[in-house]
Image 1: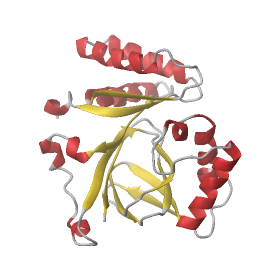
Image 2 (image 1 turned 30 degrees about the vertical axis):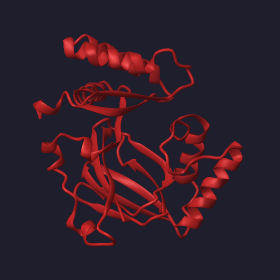
Image 3 (image 1 turned 180 degrees about the vertical axis):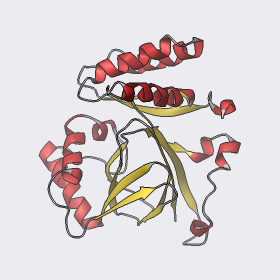
Image 4 (image 1 turned 60 degrees about the horizontal axis):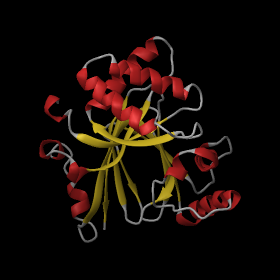
Length: 248
């Protein structure tokens, strides 16, 4: 694993509503006080979160894979103190951008090469500290989503049901959203809260909606145009990993 720890990845850093700034500051300081590499990682956190409004909860940065390893270690220590956890997510990082040796660990399933035109449109790796979350959206191509480690819960809705729910949220916000882009608006503030509540709130799911829990080794086919939101089953700060292929 050591040869790959300096490989850069796109990260999302989530600031929890409760004690989020304090947790990120603690993580920054723990990195800075470890070693020279840790100071470089701390600088990346500092740059990503500097000069932003206190209202911001979602930050993006590029940093080595080592940052995620340090985050898992930090969270392990935080759990022992029953303290808040840092939320880092390598979300939708393209498989072709991985080192060749890592790409070979997640080969495309033969199944998707035998259906349709056998054309893999795109593929991504998802690695992060729990809780992880992807808001309600739809994909322009069929999707095979596979769980690598830990577990995730997926809620799916057929095209008409999902569109009505999504448009209802956008109407309340008085804006037009993009349901196929993992936008900043989706990931923080009022839109994030409303989409999360609409999909994961206390109200019973619609009769034509589906929920499935994926554990390591499980896969799920998501048809083209079906709306879905995905979150980790646990919120304990440990590693969660998934991979997916969009095909046609």
